[in-house]
Length: 434
Ligand code: URA
Image (cartoon, rainbow, N blue to C red; front, top):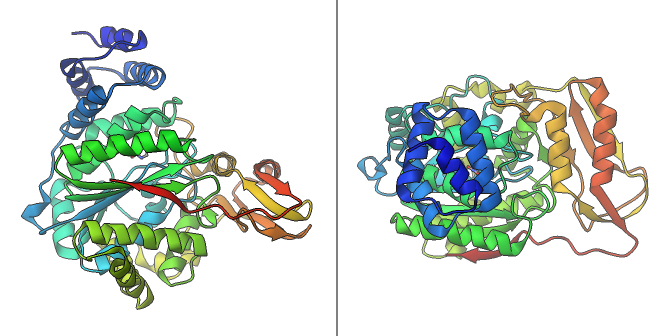
């Protein structure tokens, strides 16, 4: 078998066999298939798609490209969650410690930034010393000891996804249902949790632009999860405007810390409570969503969720003094407020444009392995539906290069649309699959 023939077959829109998919994934991991062929193949998949059977085979091949953990060795049941990628989506940073604080162990493998969306691992690495590349032994040890662990792909867990993910990030091959489904579900299967809540984003700042596409992706992932014997559900959630206020790594960590201190933005808090509630029910900790929500609210309010977050940071080598005093997190040199050029109701704050502005400031990568600037990003001070007076603050730009300020201002203002008449706020969720 030759990699080039598999690329050509997919380029021509034909269905790959399981053997061909397994050969390709093996070659990707062993290094026999070089990055340029993997990237060409990813583009062929992106443009030609995959059948359900191919997607399932790809997921299983990627999950088995490293070890597949059996968490029942260390905890009776563990739960996991994963987002398909959004702008300002720092949900894991709040939900993981909240659920763990309710006594349900959370073992999660996360990704880095992807395209214009942020990545949990990049955010956590704003904290000096935080180590996400854990060995399997460390993953299991931390889950058992602390009930919480947050890992990046490592040489041991779903390494094929690590390779493909970094290439997709910089080759325009992110928004593909089979590539997203296999990326997420291979990590979930390898990390071993028995219950999985998927947060499938839909809208202008998501890889799935329409509810129909998001639903297809959700159904595909839920089916793969169930096939692998995991309790799996997917929430369809809005990503037309950024989630919460902060977009950019350290800024998002700070917002997560505020939320864990009960001072988070209303939409983000609500989003976290809903995701946490589903995790608690699916993991068998709560009998229904109402009691799950009360549990999650209590863990946030009495500081147990915050304590768990500190535990996570300390367990993975992070400098806890930076989360105790977020002013010690990376800070940008230039901070500028962008004000409203007119009065009216905000009818759009395009999440993709805000995400791309954050990338332009240096919060993401344009080439594989690029360093990122943890300090930079944007605060979004209003939501769709808000009435804003001319001259009122709309955004705050955090930059480390002065020349970025003007470009960011222009892009952010272009992200907004205005209405003379009142506009309804956007919903947070559109449905549940599973
Ligand atoms: N998150 C992932 O882990 N992979 C994707 O492809 C998209 C979001």
